[in-house]
Image (cartoon, rainbow, N blue to C red; front, side):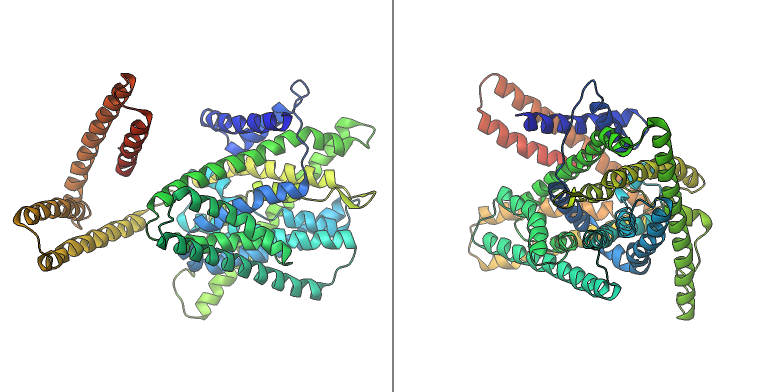
Length: 547
């Protein structure tokens, strides 16, 4: 029962921390880390023992799967050059540069272990950056950070696993490691794509036979990232890349027919899981901080001098990571500009200014994936032999996460102060044209229905009723065309009418809901009727959006 109580307490804290984060002007991860540390204070004394393998398996697959699912694929492809250089090249650059620096700074950490630590410090967290920047980052920069965070989660953790193997076995060959990296990466991607495709075929087969219960399909998709991870690991390839590939593939397979209810339920469930899992990871970091600090200074005679020196080591490592990232961003952007000019492409050849480079540099915030990876370091190399400096590795990773969050909280608002909010005119225009095209397609389909109805025998009353209903539906679609008319005056008038209609509809829906509650209080309807009608009213109000 103690484990159940602990889980419930942590979930409650995740929810409460979200509310506190709305009052305190700090990023949510910092609030959650502070809440976890407070909970682990000796007076409260909550302690959670973590199994590294279970921690990695429980948290990483669903988070990486969700990132792959939500990533804008078109923008990812358009910015594939900068994203790949950040997600792969920068990871290798960081592993080599920071790895040698960590080993030089702290010789007690073996070089392979230093490489492993540098690799696990490479993944970034675009969600934390978005929360700090409050959607003020220019869209291309934000897309780069999102694409980098998606891909370097995989590249950094795969490199981390290779470095761990080298640290445990003491054997490392660059040629063999490079070949194994390619095979493991390609195998993981293929496993995720194939498994996701097979699930899509299974769901299509089920839907064709009328087995379209939303809960069943959502459960299948919840199990998919874990299945992709486990199957890939059993095959000896990357389970991390398999989970990412499964998520990216599933976003294309999510357009199956007769799945509206499933999509609505699936989005809600995954939003809840992302919120809970991200929050739990940072809470667990806060809970582990006292134990990590104790373990780091346990072999020293003096507490505060040792802790101070370790904190200075963390600051030095963070600054080196920052400098390496800035050097790479500046150098690669200049190289990409030179290559584009050489190929005769005039667009996007301008080298970004120093402000943009610093935005990308401080935007490389470390987060949940770094913590989950470092927590997965094994406790023992073999029977009776502990992993070298495991507690110190976790302490450094936790310190770098905290410093990157604090630095981003200070630097990003200052850097964004002189940058106006990014215009989303292009996105709005694309949305407007999409609505126009879909409304026109609906009108054409209803007009074509006349020929079908004329071929089918029906009486005059039925024909008149059908004509009236079609006219009513077509008027709604013509109203959509008016709303998204190209004329600015027509758009403004249609928008005012649309807002007025929404307010009236919301007022009517609220009146329906109050009457429904009244009927239930007076026992004039049962719970089943209440749930069914209330669900329809809620769905109708959700379709109206924010008023």
